[in-house]
Image 1 (cartoon, rainbow, N blue to C red):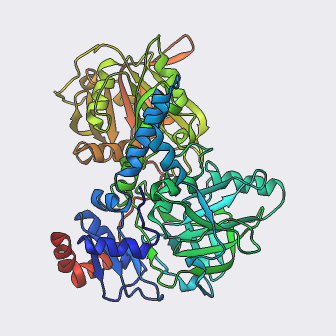
Image 2 (tube, rainbow, N blue to C red; image 1 turned 30 degrees about the vertical axis):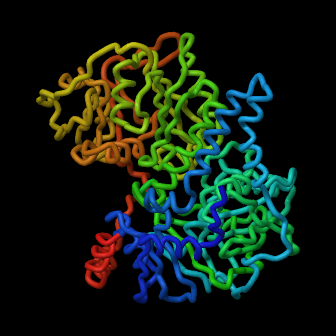
Image 3 (tube, one colour; image 1 turned 135 degrees about the vertical axis):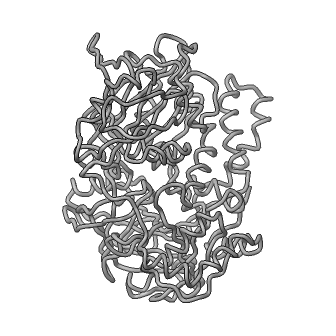
Amino acid sequence: MKNNLTSTRQFVDKLAQEGELWRFEAPIDPDQELAEVQRRVVAQKGPALLFTQVKGTKFPVATNLYGSQKRIDLAFGSKPGQFIKDLAQAVDGLLPPSPKKLWDAKHLALTGLKVGLKTKHQGPVLAEQVSGLDQLPQIKSWPEDGGAFITLPLVYTESPKSGKGNLGMYRVQLFDEKTAGMHIQIHRGGGYHYHEAEALNRSLPARVFVGGPPALTIAAVAPLPEDIPELLFASLLMGEKLEVGRLDNLGTRMALQADFMISGLIPPYKRRPEGPFGDHYGYYSLQHNYPYLEVQSVHHRKDAIWPATVVGRPPQEDHFIAEYLQELLEPLFPLVLHQVKKLWAFEESGVHSLAGAIVKDRYPKEAFTAALRILSEGQLSLTKFLMVTDQEIELKNFRQLITTVLERSDMTTDLHVLANISQDTLDYTGPQVNLGSKAILLGLGEKKRDLATRWKGPWSDSRLGEAHLFCPGVLCVGGAPWEKEKELAKWLALEPSIQKFSWVILTDEPEAAAQSNEDFIWYCFTRFEPAADLYGAQRVERFHVGIEGPLVLDCRMKSWYPSTLVPNPKIAQGVEEKWGAAIAKACRQK
């Protein structure tokens, strides 16, 4: 099961051997120019990139390393996935145990012996040092970003109380030579550790690793249960023990095979403005006060390569990481969530805005308890809209999912809105940061209805515009902007010509929203909050608000929403003039 990739350079060399790397040797500005090249290559399904002359730094920069299924396979192979499948089957089949069953599962024990942490007293990342953060690549991706960011940071902290470690990917803004903004979200492990440290009035030791074994990067973003250590999961992906050590006064564990290691302290009760940052939702995450790291040292390998990515409206490079992790961990969900057969979070929504599940429904509305269980588990607790069915469907196919659910749902009883609760930090649709709502929609049992497939019109209200069918039962409708007609969605629910539809999406761009699964998910689920933006003829029965007739979702841009991400036109034009033809050629040759 051994993978042997323990550094970014090894990974880059392997990609080059496979014809999956474009060596970009022209001088390039890390201020938006590099990101523009990356975005164009991703859009054309092109190769990984190695920028050898990045202005302002001596370090080469590698991007799009994970931007295809082939490159994911080259990084990890098939053995981790097979091991997890075998492990899940063994857990299910070993009880009651017997000598034959234990013997048949012996390969799992042998593989397990290779997994773990190996304590060392020296490592590649300690080979050299630079004086400060200003020596690192200063990558800015979008025009309104608040500065340069580390876009693949592996932030490692340990609980001041229990000593348990957490490896997470929280963006890091490079303020100056010795200070970095730490976007440690309160819903994540690193945020819990910082909260504990503040309660003790202590600084929190932290390390930011960049690069090293690809498995470290994947482990940092994996939606693991809270008690499974990310470093152990990285070792599993590598097929060998991960080299670690505690070799300085900071005391916190080091990942000794990383390409870079930034070490320091996060002081308690101190904040600095961090952001804005163009994030994976496709909008700017706005400027807020966040903790910061007081840097003590910056170490790196002799042959270090700085891995980076560019996030934005999905799909980007991180699309392939999200899909890989979900498919890798899928066999484990029924072990942790016993009523859940399959689960899929739609990366096109920014991951947390939309998920679908196939569950068991053996007694009346057992599916609802399964839904609550999903919303209680780790990162899944950030899910904003959860669609649940008991039908065996291709869950990743959103049109099939929503059609199946709407054919079976009763909006008077099967739509559950949970208001005034937490919401993902990066989702600005709620009334304030970290506050919002969730919705669960059940579609269970036999098919109840045929869904409308044609809108006959005309409108009785001149404020409404063009209409486009997304799928049976779902109509995308244009209308006046939210700032001009805030109550339009309420009136749309009463419109005679839509009464045969199950869902009606009020949007600023109805034609674009109806084009594809990806477009619909992004235009719809990133632009509404269930408790604030669902409309219909309400009926309250048994203390439950149900909807009679169509459900209208107001997915227009609201005045407090952050801007969508648009590249600087001058930089985009410059990249086209200098390298447009070369980019197209490199992508064709891949």
